[in-house]
Length: 180
Image (cartoon, rainbow, N blue to C red):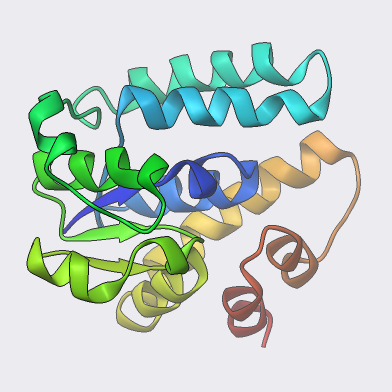
């Protein structure tokens, strides 16, 4: 399954790392565009002066780890599309160009299901998507999450519970399922 990752699931670090760790388990193929990666870098500015340079370094590492993930599309594709927020048509264009099955976004309102269906796409939020993958492949998802959690704990220098870490990462259902 090919999944286009919107910038709002790429930018939160733990969410992105969990998604990519699950992808490394072979449960889906991630896709993005240069523009989505640029949105991630710009969003990191809110962390302060170190945010954007750090994000750009992470983007370089992500590109190296997933060299086939970046999709391109002609401007004519984006020009023919319509979404409630015109600033999101590039996301839909990238999903179509990459032959994605799904757009993973935290912004359901701007990706109406009836429009996506016309293009052969679905949308889902990260927590729901990861829950479905966990229900189908519990061991693989748990391995991926445990690797990310160990790294996050080491970097933070604190022993946060898995449930608290995933809740903070806007993955509360997955956190509850894995902690329970």
